[in-house]
Length: 328
Image (tube, rainbow, N blue to C red; front, top):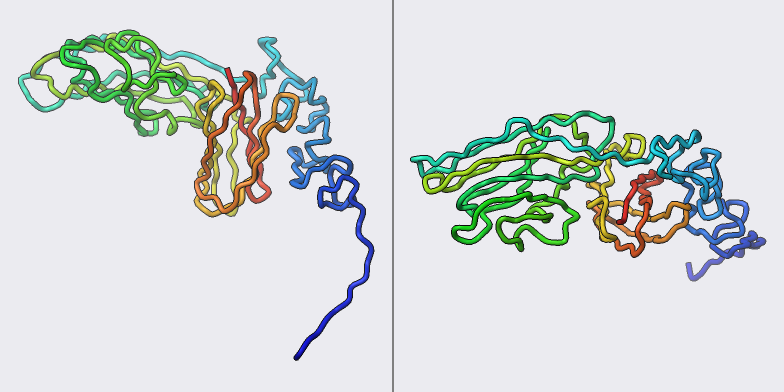
């Protein structure tokens, strides 16, 4: 076979907005949108849909523009609808003070303070741990937070110089600007923990939480756990970004949240996936649009310059995940 050919004759289909999608297939005929994003799957692309959550309330009037809430309920009248409103509450341990006495043993001793958080029907998107501990040699101590599922993170580990004392009104927060490893005893103020609170995001606060204080050299010095509390910030279950793609349960996480404009978006996909990321403002305008090919355990950092509420939208294999972000 030396050669062969075929001649095809036809008429190009109209493409009014030159986005590579023919008008008859384009969900925004006059506005370029090659990705054809359509949050509410109503056949009208997000870039030209004045009601992207299809709740009959226009984006610029909707107090939850990417979460359907036709009743626009807003119990605290703060302009953010209850359907996408975060709720924050503090739970305090009632078993303090807990003595950490000097021991005759050289083996580390473990002391625990426990609190039980309520089930408010939401999932954690922000968490802060407050502790107050008297100890005459604070560098002896390792502090660990354990959640209801048994997941643990290290808050602090043998920090401080010789003869430094106490954790006084110490708050651990992923939003803090200073790492606890850069702090100075008595560590008064807000600090990033050694390990972030990531295992607890998008989980229920309900259950028993433990502050585990390990005195690594109890024969020399002792102390007291004076207080332990946790502030939980949650979002409604209806705004949680969990779904199933090809029999794989996926969960979208954005942390820290709230944040100062810099945050991380992650998706626990174990299979290679093409991922589409769009970040909307409260008016439904797409501020960031990115495509990522062949991603496994997708993870990316985002920076936003202006304070406010934003919505992270991730699409995987036609499945959409949405997460609300607060920038302070």
